[in-house]
Image 1 (cartoon, rainbow, N blue to C red):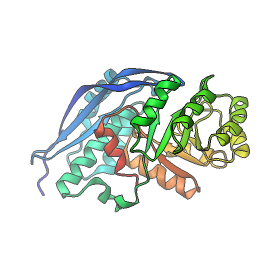
Image 2: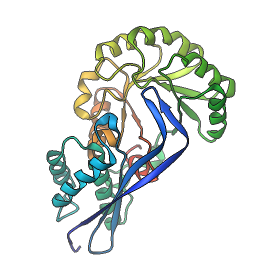
Image 3: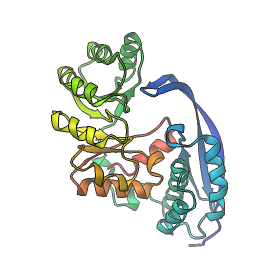
Image 4: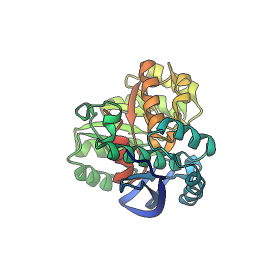
Length: 301
């Protein structure tokens, strides 16, 4: 198989959500993401996406600046993925979304050169992929009920909480559907508020509680887990595999996102470490196009 130098292209893409997507930290309707394309000399190309968020210290502009540096460190052999990703991680540690886009594009390119989907690179079976949830952001009860109807095809709903209207939101959801619901406070509660909400969540049939507290409050997460009858999942508290051991015994599972962890291989490591410690695994996304979401789907089975 001929080896040619890789070429990289990057471009902005503006995404507009059907509804403003609002969580406990705020929200908006318009998002900018960055698409990355890697090409080899044989006509193969791989795609990736950088869903930059200021919360994790990135913007589309910083992504493009980072990619200019990464362009000088593209592998001569695209199959040398492990070493390439180590080099990228060392080059720019503070740009996980940019690295995730390159990682996705590189894996996509390798899969296309081999003629196999990316999940086959890890021997995964897509039939074992978990069910997908549909996330409903903060809004008025009337609009929330309308969003539930729009999500008719999805078997599970994830509801954003973390406000002073959380009971009202849950009531609006239950007025509209009897589907399984999970909730995500995005760190919007205190320990006292979270513990007070536990019986309320049970009343409304909530099955999972995600990130009730700010990221660094691990002892608080442990206090909530001891009292909760439902699994507690860490999202903002868990960026990479190195964050998992301190969470053991404090939460029941983790939420992996490419834009947090920085690469498909780091996501695979996170899955292995989490399962070795008996934690469940959820795979999430930012506001992304199908390119970013599809890349993550390949490691979910």
